[in-house]
Length: 167
Ligand SMILES: CC(C)(COP(=O)(O)OP(=O)(O)OC[C@H]1O[C@@H](n2cnc3c(N)ncnc32)[C@H](O)[C@@H]1OP(=O)(O)O)[C@@H](O)C(=O)NCCC(=O)NCCS
Image (tube, rainbow, N blue to C red):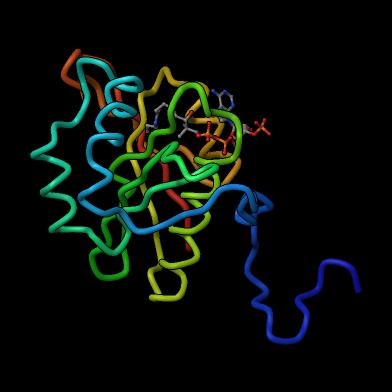
């Protein structure tokens, strides 16, 4: 019957974007990737970009889901997700502006969600600029729903929007 869970499948909803684009390869982050990650970070976030020191911190604290996305052997994006107990947070995700809308962000998020599911994590959340319609649309495509808005969440005074979904 259409829509029913097949043998061995969970009946929980899967979003189509959780099937990653095959041309994108997701690998664990390695310190050798830092230079390229920093240049993607600056291209995406300019004055709000994380520093090398902060990336080193996340490599220590959240290495399980600190990921890089490769296309044709070149790093095109990264994501950092930190899990604590049954809850996890997407700390950052960014794709080289010249490679956006090509599936790398989806591949990183799909990989993270699948890993969190296997580790029995129950909830995933993040903060996004409340004005960032592109990123909010990206997360909605993965089933995230908007929660509270936090005034002056970012250093430049912009509001943040919490988004969350079950795993
Ligand atoms: C948000 C981001 C990570 C998405 O990565 P990506 O590789 O470009 O996303 P994908 O190609 O996997 O896009 C999947 C879908 O998300 C939606 N989407 C992604 N970017 C979008 C945008 N700018 N505007 C509208 N929809 C968007 C689309 O539905 C897209 O599917 P489509 O291209 O078939 O229409 C990337 O745009 C990025 O790095 N942005 C700058 C940094 C940033 O804002 N990070 C998030 C901070 S919370």
